[in-house]
Amino acid sequence: MKITANNPDRNSWLKVEENSDFPIQNIPFGVFLSDDNITTIGTRIGEYAIDLAVLHQLNYFEGIPLTDDIFMQDSLNDFISCGKTTWRLIRNRIADIFDTENSKLKDNKKHRKKAIYNIKDIEMLLPVDIGDYTDFYSSKEHATNVGTMFRDPDNALLPNWLHIPVGYHGRSSSIVVSGTKIRRPKGQTLPNGESQPIFGPSKLVDFELEMGFITTAANKLGKSISINEAEDQIFGMVLLNDWSARDIQKWEYVPLGPFLAKNFASTISPWIVTMDALDPFRTKGPEQDPKPLEYLQQDGENSYDINLQVAIKPKKQEEKVVSNSNFKYMYWTMNQQLAHHTVNGCNVRSGDLYGSGTISGPTKDSYGSMLELTWKGTNPIQMSDGTERKFINNGDTVILRGHCKNDKVRIGFGECKGRIRKAK
Ligand code: CA
Image (cartoon, rainbow, N blue to C red; front, top):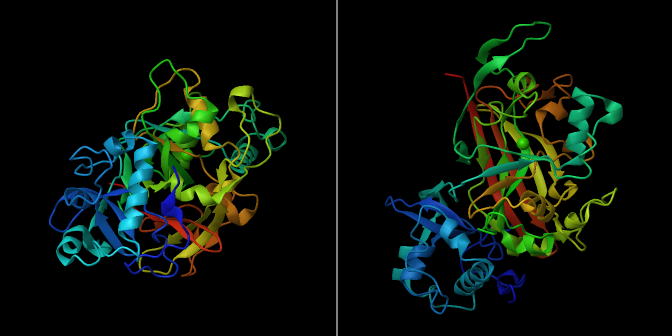
């Protein structure tokens, strides 16, 4: 089935600013709380949020097999379970409804009033009920930087790294939507030169620039998803800030890996941009040498050209952009990650979230964490107000942004932001 929603020549009768992340070709999915306190599933065009439950009730999705309450939910999990054909039918239909050529809803003031909100009048909620969260470690530059800093510059990558999309199982209960304030975590750390740990607020809170993908219920326990099937099981992507406490991490991570340094919070952007919307921005990932094992081999363009940016905004000050990167630098693709994740028969479910791992580019201004940008704090970054940052201070807001762009269309993710509050 053709993705007619992606037609770059299409315009909407809803106003869309020129550099908007949400033209009619995007049609992301999210969950919001309306000003009459109703939680619903919606999409976004320009500065408008559209209530899909209302459109469904008013019969705008006639002919598409859907249950009556599919959009009257506080998560997208059931809709995601409907599968790729339904996702595509709904996006195509929404594009038609809001196309300048179609006056059905445009000329129906009563329906418009019921279904369309100004984005300022709604509150975005977590788009999915995340059962499981897995975080990969798939940026070669990031893994090399961390290996260089903490182990051995000559053997920065561990022997398995070029063969396995390395990952660990994270915590889903503390994943929050953009805008949620983050409490500085407390925990055990080992001060430099000491042999006994101390307890207190982390001094080294960091962001991790990541993207996340969300799957449908793709396989039963004991079955795997082949690399060529993987793509159809991925609903879409979000921006992900996998907050980290580097001092807690350093003390706790041996031998089982990340724990309390990572699970105090992770922030995601509220609108899930579908893989269909990102399709025009496919690109090849980096050359993989050595060649991965057969179950991880795939031809074609399996990565995506997504510009990424991180800014830090101190309280009441101008923001400072600290990193410009791109998703296409990722060494392992999402298809490889999902094929690997399930190759042992591990089942994945609708609404599960997978982090890419910190995305670092090849240059120093494209690194995806303060750990790397300031090289463990040895090169502090100057903020707009003249103060310096080695890591994130109380009151700082970290903002991730992402968008794809070609000659005709810009598809974006909006913002993924969170402010660090002082420890309790
Ligand atoms: Ca991470």
